[in-house]
Length: 266
Image (cartoon, rainbow, N blue to C red; front, side, top):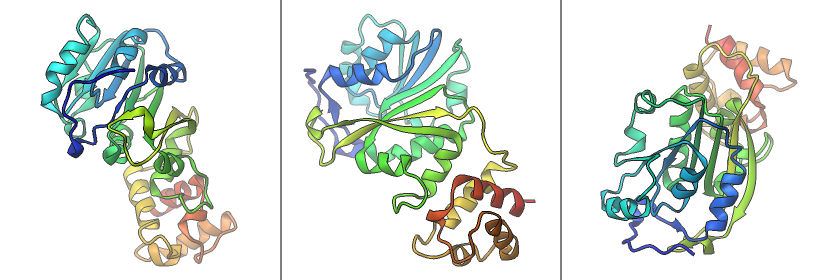
């Protein structure tokens, strides 16, 4: 079991893993390829970082808590292939940060602070970088939302956006007892593998806004949520897939949103 000599900060969502068997399982499902760079957010006490350093050629970490400098320096002593940047990942220019790295495959593997899980994923999407695989430990309920299919009540805007880009798989559950301090929720490790073939999309920004608008009032129909758009076009597209304006967004698969976006964004 890993031990830490740090003061945990609730405002940073710090819950550190203590069992190395969990991080070894994370590495085992990551399909590590040679000459790869991996990004980690929130290395904390470096239990995952050390395993990443043993498996990947290069590791780039982002840590917002400056008080962890001493702990990370101690835990990562001897790992010359790890760079830790003490800065806010959400405010960072990832493409610029990695431009001096030489690599063939890019990964993102992290036990991220749960309160910024969705912003991190949206940042990865909007970075336009091609990640061979993303592996994240997230809150169990959030992992279910990411990987659910249309027709389920957990299905939402983030589900549609992520499923446009990735094949998503819930890999394994992690008990809250595997963390220190112990959080109030259980967790799940989720993997995101970039789809080889995506539906042709004219304008991602428009698509993203359309998806948000479709789900803005969860229990309202497409007719109500998209009333600022051309409803005749919306109705024509929905009819192609055997839906109508009285359908709720949670019933529509990704390809319907893509078709709507391409037609409405002309």
